[in-house]
Image (cartoon, rainbow, N blue to C red; front, top):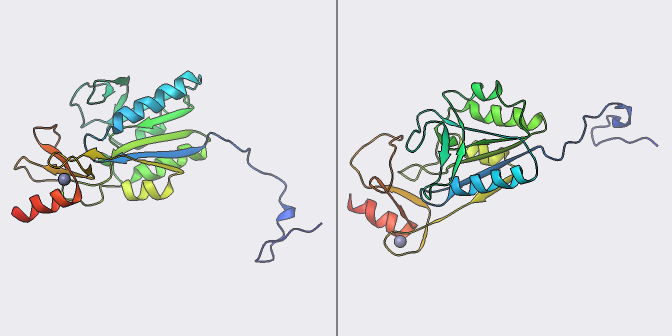
Length: 203
Ligand SMILES: [Zn+2]
């Protein structure tokens, strides 16, 4: 039997196929601040560890709010992590892992997208967690591209500080400018769209 695709190329002549690797996938966990992204990431990591998978965790070096070599949720759940400056450093360290987890991924430069795809192409699971929007409500860094290439997206919400509605925005309450300003509830509050628009029209 001759099997051809629409362009008339005979694909039955293809004699080698890459091995199917069921673990190969990119998972994205995203949402505003205080939505439980790191907690969800740590939960996923725990699940993979229970399945006897080898997990290696990375985070950008600039994020040292709680611990230098760990990722820590706001509830103080913790997993040990390599702090790296550039996405290329992840490629030096991922080979011994079944699962690669990356926290605060929005802080890496755009090469993180290729790095995540490369790791998935090697048959690994890649889980990344990050803010989908910056403090001005704009798509953050490479998050849009990561969400495009993802196999699965877990989009989380927080609780609006003012009305307890579904919060999608990380509103900065401090006076600092610049996209990257690290902080906790002293600097950011989660807001729903209505309260976010109300706050910003008052500025
Ligand atoms: Zn609200």
